[in-house]
Length: 296
Image (tube, rainbow, N blue to C red):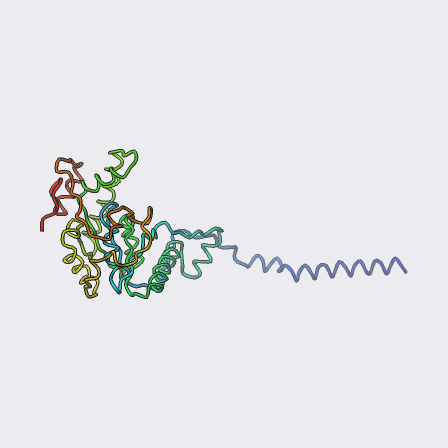
């Protein structure tokens, strides 16, 4: 009897185990009918998400072209927030698991659009904190990614700030501890090619550093008209306003910019020679191949 009871208990436990297994795992036929996990799909382009800032302003310029001066002049306006360089192009998101891309796709997002949403949030946060209604980012490397900025914000406005390429080369050479001519020429050419693309492709407002320093009222009046805001004389007295700390990697930090006064642009050496393509671009921008400020 005892052996029969133990056998019955054993059969019961086995049956209970089968029922528990079925409760935990679907039957084989159900498993066969279920779709296998979808692998991450490449090539998906997410639609543009709504923007908090529909029409930001970007200053496109080479390095060493007076963009910090333009920033502080604009930031002195009662309606314009132009903070230090924000370096949006180096702000990235990371999809750290292979299924994360699928999860974001279900939300109609991809890596690039996630970054765009983040960039937009940063601009909106800074604009809200300032209490102003126009935001300007003047980071020079933005010139290298202007198509992406235009894709991110179709309503963005662009100010193209030019300077004689020879003067840019001289300024960079003076700043570098161990300047290498070929590397500096290549760097300046890269910026200038992108600026020429932007100048000829965008409905941008084009100004020059030389004119900005020679007649700041005229140039800033033109910029304000482009932005649809009234000109304010306080813009020319930028030293009376707080523009944050001037320090490396966030813009110009020289004694000239810290002086609070608009100072004349240093002209290119009239004896300097430019590589052919840079000379061509200089002429296209209204400069002679070397030296003098642009015509008009």
